[in-house]
Length: 397
Ligand code: AMP
Image (cartoon, rainbow, N blue to C red; front, side, top):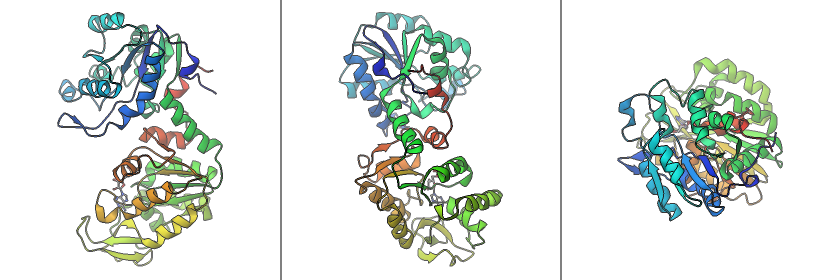
């Protein structure tokens, strides 16, 4: 189903409720990565240029008790947004009530405001996270149009996305949501081939659905990171003290059977005896692990092999680091993947959210790919081929 997009909607002079994903990391009162704020700017600027009255809101972290509220106010996020927009952003530290309603009523065309963390509504009965009907109806009553631009929560059915969309007259996808749907959706449904997927991260169990779906859609699925060892143990290799999910060995065997030559595992590794950046390292083939050693990165032969398999690829989807990239001595495999993808000039390269996005940005590849997703869980569920409630709830075109 093709969803209505924000440029299909007449917003001039209307009160437009915009669900953004401003769930940014904050340490000691400082935003340490404002990528999500920057990614929302095109949508907000577009609405302001078209003289909408913009009311934006987001969740920030998890809030279960009054105490959890501390440090989770969106006030500093509103300030950061104002800096980026070069414009005043009025902040209302409420999620409902007279003050909020008066501020919205006073908003003029071309002005923007923000209200408080939607998850403050979770303290009594998880109203936001359980998509409480009254809350959805109330928020919907505050505006004329709803724009969902929060891809990061599109896999959740919350009052601030699905609830509002259900009870408001008109709803559409924002530019960022549109971009996410276009990039990931096209890669899955209509990829230019060869289509190569790279899947890493710790657990096979987190990515079963994605591996299965990509085995159907991609020409190759390259595996890296901690999940490699569950596959290797399933094949009968000694993996020493490497991370493993022993209860997923049967599943790993099934995936290996289903995947055949399409599913490619690393052939060599960086091994150590301790989970420590300074521990001595040995490079070894997959049949050379001792009982005391763990694999923390892929080795040079694997990097070379994966580079060959990626040569000429026209679509690449990457989700999950291939090593413990947080430790400099085990980051080489993940950096090599970044570098290789950055040099695939003719390919559409899509980086799933979460850790692979963090790694790509950390190593300086933020602008080197076609698209870095802003959603970890959401991009995984989309890659699995699931319908995202935060998208499904929007008006059709
Ligand atoms: P995930 O959240 O499942 O995508 O996993 C990301 C995490 O996997 C990162 O924090 C990496 O440090 C970790 N990781 C990658 N390779 C390994 C490995 N060989 N052993 C343990 N952890 C790993």
